[in-house]
Length: 470
Image (tube, one colour):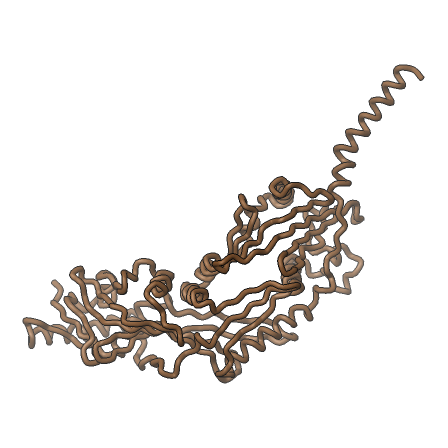
């Protein structure tokens, strides 16, 4: 054999080794055969969850003795939710009339080359495994299969926070150290979506915090309350109270998350006060008309009692003022809607606006919240109550000194009340008082042409001592 031929063979071997390293080895290393749990992708999977949810909510609405809401979120339900979201843009996925087409088998396509089989979960009592599978297609034929598996260890801390810490990341047949695997996974995701894995997690995660340094997902009071705050601050405050009273119990077992919420302590008491009757202001002209009459009365009273004029406001008047001033800042309505066996179920969790009651020398503030179901008589009611004494400080601020506060049978201490009020307005609570700034007071009585010097409750009326403006 001549030298030239030997050299050629050597070069050919080197070339084949390089090709194997660059192409063959990655194909071997990244190969993973996965199979999505297609048997879970059906209405029966979600009906099981929604039936339990409907039963729990209905019992709360119609049964005054029902005191617990208990529900399980299974991995099969989670997988169905993921499937519906991923395949939302593909109306052919697993639809029998399209069997044989690629769109029937794959939830989504990436650049017409990668067919995504899906993303699914498996739950045990101490771990969550997330699996993703995809095929590389050439002319509609499967050329290569790959996948990703991430295992999270689940730990419940003493402060009721769940830590989902990445224990393993396997890409194909490669089981790299966690941080290297995360970086590689992020690179692949970035190549396919132009986003880092961390950015994608942050984008998709409605609540909780992903800590990249620790490779852990933290879900607890802070993340959940921040998430609810984006929906409505009042809901966020309510969840804070639920956490502080240990009314929410979360547990994980094989196949599901178990959620139990003790509701009886939150139920509205029969002694709770109702909202008073008053005429709502529908427009600025209603306020202008009221303040014009108010200003005329103020001038008349000042003429009759020039040394110390005052006006007594009734409950109806101060509630009309408060209701218009607050608008929809406190009041909320959260629809709860879902399909069950082809029937739309409609619930609503909503509140009144904040209303005030006057009794002897006290002013009390109240917020009633109710869970109701369309076409069903009854409701599950809760009510926040705050009793105060009214005064005014040297700055012209109205000061409400807290006497006591409760929601259902829960007596709310000052620390908890500060946290709850702080969710709505971090500057409102000062010590054991709620301070309504002078500017807000002036806004409430804009157009009355008075400057309030003092205020307090006397004989079930709000007495305002004032001077005439200008």
